[in-house]
Length: 395
Image (cartoon, rainbow, N blue to C red; front, side, top):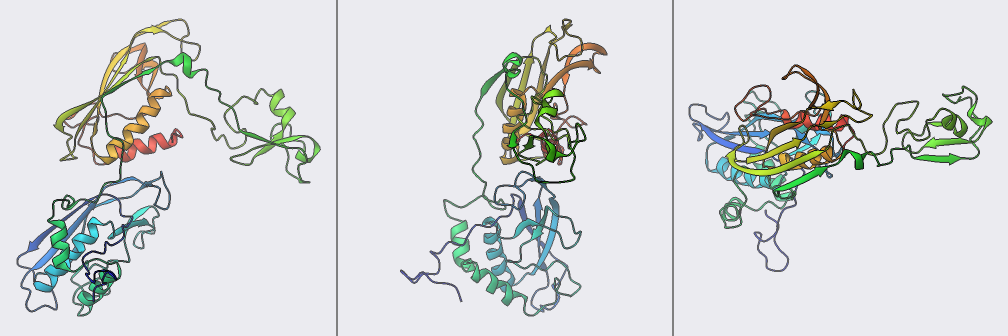
């Protein structure tokens, strides 16, 4: 039974909801010499394979901004008969609506922030029986009922919609709207960055409750004087202790060391240029390539550099990103890092074997398209780079 529109009576005009599956790819093929257990009319089996790479959770996932653990080639099976092919068509449609996977805690590994099967669309993943394997005479019926409950139309309507002019790319999740990459040039001035105030966000507490907790600076009880509390981590101190210790303008909590305010580095001034290449980014086909160019001229080291007053050697660097959703979102964070002085620093150049040079800071960049440690392809680069930016407290 398929739900029908109360106005026109047609089951094909009701659109199923969007799920929360991250982007990925669905493949299907035929295992020619592998009968599907329990189906005498199926001398072969349909193999479904899903790839969902590591990435960052979106606002509708359990921990927005945190990385999740993806996977390659998660497999499922269907009988290669009329009933199995009809169900395959509906599952493809459910995949395109984001209904097959979600982000949560893996029952297999016990690890949180993992890609897990959605309970909405059951799959058979083995030929060895059991709740997730073949044979199972009820599976086709149960799966169809689950899809009906999700308002997924019948196979004929699914096929018609997916073959229409407005159909989504086969095997690809609908992409979340992301900024369009435009050719641009971004100036960074280290003098202007130094003017950004970096202070703890403190909340006055005129009467701290009676407690045995002591101020971490003077070791006297907090109830013995006027106190202030760090709003974010809730650690409290005597206001006079913060002021006497010169910590009032600091951006780190004296107890937990957590950093507050906007992160900033000590990169010299320069220019970041963003351009688009027509070549495919290795490992991310069919995505093209985003090209980043950094230009930092030579200059004089500032007070926050290793040798203030001494001249440093500038640099020109090129880096690359895939022009897809993950690459574009990472680009936004790299632009933020650049404008906050976090991309480069002044120090010893391993390449030039020389001090007083502009060098990469801690944020990894891919500078080649022909492989190697610093080149693409690298399936975990975006995850690693986002983790590094998380550690730097970038939004």
